[in-house]
Length: 97
Image (cartoon, rainbow, N blue to C red; front, side, top):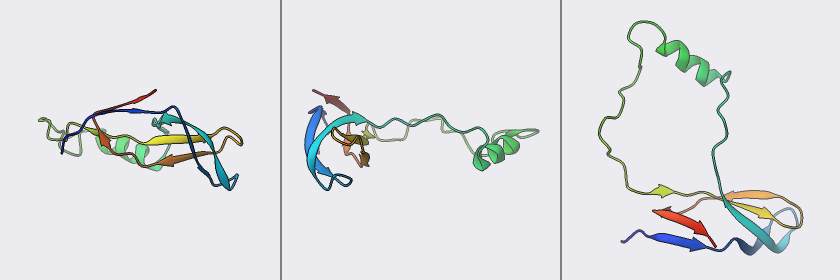
């Protein structure tokens, strides 16, 4: 199976759950937001790293992962502005044309 670069359209007509009909949607890549420093997991991790011994888990030294990413695509409805996130496929690169 050959993984390739994909050119996807900027706009697609697909189902909107809020409008309950097929409408035009604009496509964009999902990007992770800024992490909250006061979340329980972040506090726990900082506490674990502090003091003698520091890093709690082994840091990966060799690159052992696949050469591709699973891109997640955001669909934003042009009529109501409702956004949905759909699971993407494993691709080398995605480009919206």
